Image (tube, rainbow, N blue to C red; front, side, top):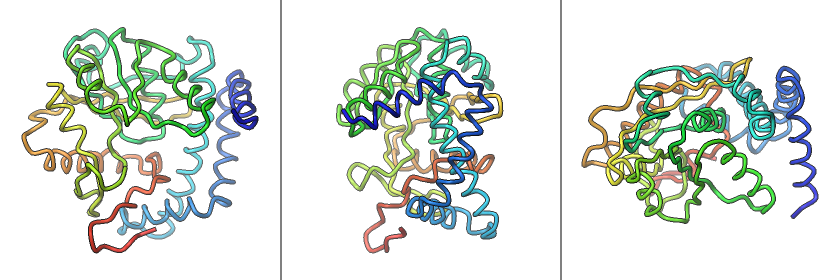
Length: 294
């Protein structure tokens, strides 16, 4: 356990007592500094935006990049109050809106359901908002952190409310499918590049992107409906929009289903491009023969 990890977690605990405008102000300043100093990560963001939004001017893409670094910092610092503030404070800053039948089914239903949660910066806030209001078992998949203390802190934060099971990506599909078949919820974030193994190349903003077809496969194996959840950082906290369940999904064609997932995700991103997780090297795995982009 590193001293820096202990200090960092202590800082987050202390930050949880501050008013939200002050936390957001610190995040704004930190995000602007990151945009200036974190040149390798800024290059990733700039490359992603150039590939996905060639129709936008360089000035428009720079504005999105500056905003996305601010949202990175603000959403990270918001985990202080999400995971440490009193429950009534957390609840007052999270607003769930959208499709009433799906919201009710998340809270009180029993049918297997996958919550498709793309990588918007409010993804942890959305998970917290939904698990606060349901007793249904909910599974989420995470990547182990290098520092054991940080890893435990993140897992405990995500399990703070509700009946949450955290699984590592290396645990395989059996416990995930088993949870679904027991009428559980799966909070799934499949819109990242995890390498060439077990991925398919499908378009993302017109660029071939290595994408795990897990949404289609888990929905089919778990006999689950898919409900998108889009999280948005707002001045008062977060707005979590639950959309209507996808019809005629999944099909027998996992590649076509994954392409449809990316196409629908593009529409969600277009509504708030600076709140998407552009700091990830989304196109690091290239089709055979294609040049690296970063």
